[in-house]
Image 1 (cartoon, rainbow, N blue to C red):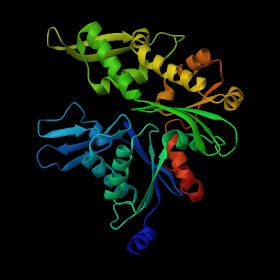
Image 2: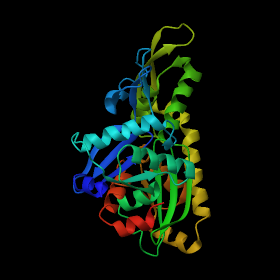
Image 3: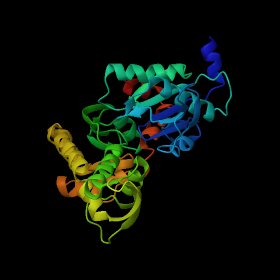
Image 4: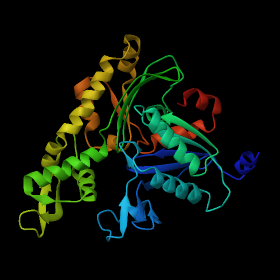
Length: 339
């Protein structure tokens, strides 16, 4: 009774609880919030000091009594209490800090998630104030978000490359026929760049710098022009700050392993797709979504390796949350596709 009363004053939400970014969609309004999944807390009192972009700016720069935490790792909850605090903050933020709100929430989760991990997501959302929680697999949400005809008896292939996971799925008749989830995404690429520069130049750089290099220089195939960038870090031999000039060829070499793992996953998915659906994919091709899809030349590389048409979704970054948001208006379909 109380829940339904609170429901009248709450907006239904769809949340893409990502490793790198959290996006929130409000029914009737669209995507209203896109913030990094980072929370800054006081080490002793555990008080939340900042969430989102304000907390991300603190990464690697906090004094001893403050710690900036990324509560999501590999697409799943690594720190339950901090995730709950983050969700509570985002729910309050989109409801303009009104009290007594109990929204219905749809949350995207990786397709390879375990029962324990599902329970953790559901519990943290309920503790943060949700009256009803629906979990939907990210590739399914991304397919709906990019406008694929998932309810038809024909095969649709989606590759969702997020911060923590890469999801490859073949979807037909509102169900996932084959899916493969691997814990490689944007975070692993950042880490690989940090390790490459440390190994090659004895220069220690931070996580944020690694991400910045990936965005500005990262590519899957050789580019027409040479891109360069100045990188600042700490020299591991002399122990003093140092500046270095790096180019896109070096970063392409650094990213070779995670990119070839993603290509291999797509190839395995194609091998295991039923022949009738494989024939549909030859006609329709593969759709790329997620932040990782924006890596320069990744679509070109996949096209060369598979021989299939490859397109990048227009709203690649927000495909999952847009798909989950559309399900708020189609409750019958939501109940069919939720896990």
